[in-house]
Length: 501
Image (cartoon, rainbow, N blue to C red; front, side, top):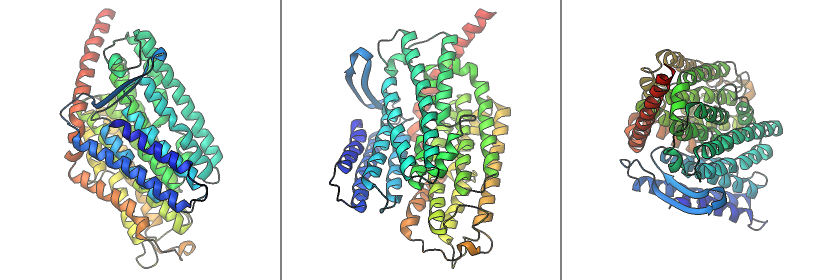
């Protein structure tokens, strides 16, 4: 059942890529949307059939692949991966729907998006470390090409920078994975096998360092973040939606699944430093966002800060904080995707994202009142206003992290206030006041432009009012994972400290 989620977009990509050269971009667009929708609907079917109370991997598939490498085709799904799979399916559909039907080389474009979706899906499903790495690397080339070919004026620079950073990330992750298998004496890369293995603390620290830097680049965390603003600014709107909404979550997912889960002693040992690192990312991302005049760059820097909350929650490693981390991944995916969509509409209609140029877009007669209203909803959600999913995810993180790291949690809460500051600057400059002369003759905004952001706004409000609809899928898995990790870490660290004494 799980292989369907990977095969459907791959088949769609192949059909579009090898279709007759004379097909129109509109036809390729519709075919891609059909295959993406099938994959998304299949994730909904799996979610309906999923049993949240079962903490083991469900719908598991296992096939031998390359015995000499110890590589097997192991797939599974649990409460950690299920919400991210649904998010990936939803945002892939939205990205394809939002793409320009008249763009150049449409067959290649939609094939790459479907290939990208298959890679991300495979990474979330993989229950084998080497298989995860293969899917993790699979999404690299499609995203590089999507930025390099259909990006902005400096797309070559941004795409190359992204490629270099991500290649280094993959190398470090692979090195840590190989180290885990080799040093544990395991004959394969199966996650279940490595879960039952305990390595010495010094070895765990070395392996965890590779994972922290590797996944820290992907998240991204300061100082490995510099590729992200360039990639977002130069990428087209649909690609920014996928990049912020889904691809960054591969980093936080990897830290939870492989860092915290497989190396519990080392994770507990470095947790205070991780919490401090989270504070730096939160405050730095918010400070940089305040200084921006490009709307898209401001939203990009906001992602750095908001993903820092996930690291804080993971460092605290309480059931409540890690539950908040998963919810933050979902809420950030919805909110950032919505904001990038709205900024894309503004740029398409007004011809600029510069806050020094555009003003008064909330004008009810000649502006973009609906887009402005949706932007207000997105800004409120990102700033953590009650009633929005952003509030509940951040509240759970702070509530779960405060007993463990009170100082770091309080400092991170400052980031929430700074979020309100820079997004209020965006609203005040771009949407309020008199309509500026530079954007006085705006083209009409159709409901087809508004619909994707409106759907995301509805989900943001629904999950903000009723967060239990998200929590119920994840809570049993997270509780079991964290309780096991904490017991192992506590016992092992007690032995280490006793040896030192």
